[in-house]
Length: 421
Image (cartoon, rainbow, N blue to C red; front, side, top):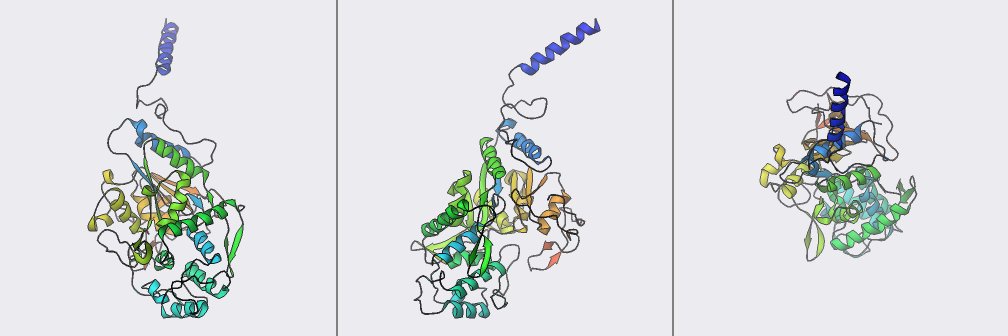
């Protein structure tokens, strides 16, 4: 009798499982019927794909929950693509004489030092009229000074290129300086430079390099297949997906369409445009007015722009962490420049490991159990030797000093060893 009952119960259970599920109903494995799935043929480290799929199922249209669309935000360089699109665009511009000589190099940045002004003036000369293209494809010294400042914030002679006061969690002068170098061009022209650089970088073999002046740098960029798939799946599951990059916005727009992100959903450094042309001025954020780059999509500045542009929070409050209903569900980044907005995410914090201390301290501490630490998908970094100094110096304060990384409750994150490599 027991055997017969068991058979009947088993048949009934099988019939129940075989029946169509109502919209939003969970399966026995916790996923949702017809929920968009991440490509299982694309490799993620450990159980990271499963963690992300669970978040998509819980927060997306398959959850059966109503309300506003969940938001996902991605950094760009070395998060969605391998290598740096600003470097690629600047390199192309220098190789094709697209930098216009400013009346004075001091006008390009409020923080530029006299030593940098002197080095640039000496290397690039004054024979070319202001507003005309510098012959950087032939003038190695000029190209070198520009790229050395971009790369190291110093001159070829080793002098500091920037000095003064700035909030180190809101801006960094050299990031502002790149769009400022393109003052005088139209936004469309800068996008066209970036598109031409993009075509060359995508055509170049993985691992190739290029030379600018005497500087050798990466000569290729690749979209990460895993991130393209994640963005596609998020969009299919009803997420509103944004790019939030510290690149100039016209440069980022040349690339973001490659993962299905339109201009409206691409946030970058926003130069002030006058009479149709880029200027050295840069839009502010929150209660920081327009200026020369005092507030960029950088560290806390990325939070501010997300709050302001996506959640429509204005004024000083845009710099603050919001309640869960006004925060992104997923944030993805690869560096300390991304740590604030990635940490704000309520569903998943994706950290692509480039051995950046504060980001990886928070990822490995995994305070809320929702951090997803993953090696770079192409040519990953080797394991960091020694521990990240989380308990002493991995946090950058607004004044540029360093201290311990702290959790939301104020406790100090202990030093962490590298685990995603």
